[in-house]
Image (cartoon, rainbow, N blue to C red; front, top):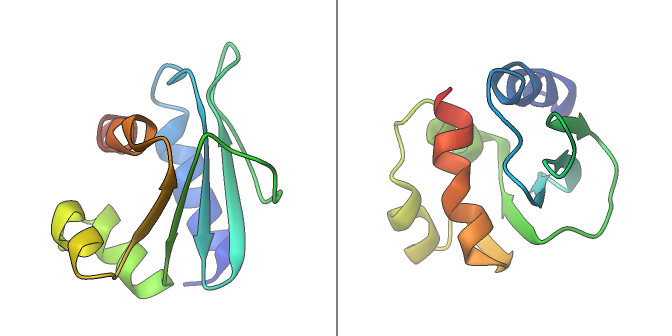
Length: 99
């Protein structure tokens, strides 16, 4: 799955949800997906902007997380996913992605 496909997958899910009141950046295989949840709706782009929280992983691990095949806490503890910044924002991700 390439970054465009992942971006569209996140965009479709984020548009189903109310804004989450923060900014979040994914770094997946060295490319970026930026979620801005501070406005009237969640906005998704591929910009490398400063964010309240950044989550770094591979596309393989991201897909497993998104499908519920990988436990987020175990992924962080085993180094498959790295979180920098506001952990509270990372915790909101589950509700944002569940839609």
